Image 1 (tube, rainbow, N blue to C red):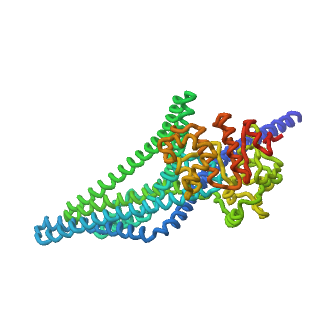
Image 2: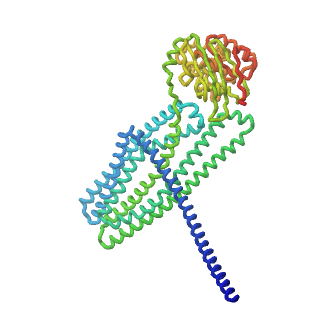
Image 3: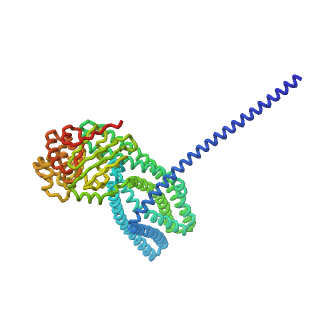
Length: 610
């Protein structure tokens, strides 16, 4: 009995072990399947992500081209004329091939009359095609330069009219790069891209139709490269867009660095940083070179592949033509036509596919230009009101700041709970450590930025207006960075008041004590300011800048560290004359010098935010 029970137990254990093994095997199979599914899902997710990126690229290109086509409508007649010339030239070139075929057949068959006729026709059509191509080149040059001129003017105007807060994030070198390189790419593309589609298509379909008429097999052989190009187009599109964008960005960095370093060459030499900057510039050039070489390697491999495919197709067509000639099915002229048109068919198809990277480059440049076009424009809403208020001058004027707060991009407030009330005849001194908000306050007064909270207003003769871009007409500004432009001293002053007489210029120059040295210059007011203003000291430049601001005759005079380049004796002389001439104005001056504060009726100290 015991033995039977033991046997039963052993049997049950064996069954349980078997079940456990089966379950373990099943679990392993499930685990493997889950892992495979996870792997598949991961690959699927990656593929979906890649497809989304590709679709996003296509969508961006599509959007940019929709915008460019709207712009091309302005020049639709010129582009249509250029397209018509291109199509006509393509048709004539196809006729040249056909007449050349007839000429060869006539020569082989000794048909003298046909030889002369086809030779004359082929020559006439070839010359016509050449002349039309020359005319179309002139037409496209005219349209392209016209478009690039208009685009540069529009973009420059947009940049100049944009809000400082929107455009200030771009480096000047990058802006110049977009004004020059990107606009050239877009203007040339707008003119040539659409006509190229029609002309290349005409050559492609015309060649295909002629070959198909004579031999269907030859037509199929000539298109052997098409499937490969179509399959690889998506990968090529993504890669070309990537390299195109990288190339433009690196060019922008190089231009920005070069411009900045050349503008500050005295500083660089003064601190013996020349070798460092040369090294940094070389580093930027090497980065750009690396991107260019990667793109060139990609282009060489692509061109090599396309050339091999094209060569294979050409030899296939050539072999088939020889075979058909050997069979006596085609003539020598027809075989020549096959070889010419097969090459033309393959090259025109390659040209059509090469329009894809061209479209990518154009759309990339267009996207970069669009970034600037999206910058917010200053609206100048209160222009009429400010001009009307300005007519009452000189009269009572006040500047008021009520609970003003400002912070840059949700950062800690630079200014907080600022309340000021200044009237004409008063001088406000703004002091404080660097970085505590003095320059920010001046930007608010100039309407370059808007307060996060609170209000800034100007009241003239009882009429009040909020400070904005419109109220700059009421403010004369002397920046800390001296901004004299290329040209003469006279031309710099006349920028502010073009109709000013010499007497007016001299009077303002005397107030700023600039006439003391200008009158001793050989050319006086017509002295040319050399590049980087080497022929004028910083103090002399500063006094000319003060005179220029006075010439504007605005009721509010804003000066940023206006005497920083002057010695104390000259500072005292300039400030006394300046305050005497500005008794009916509101004067606001930032300074680090205590000697300036004795001329101030009020002093505001910018303190760190706690």
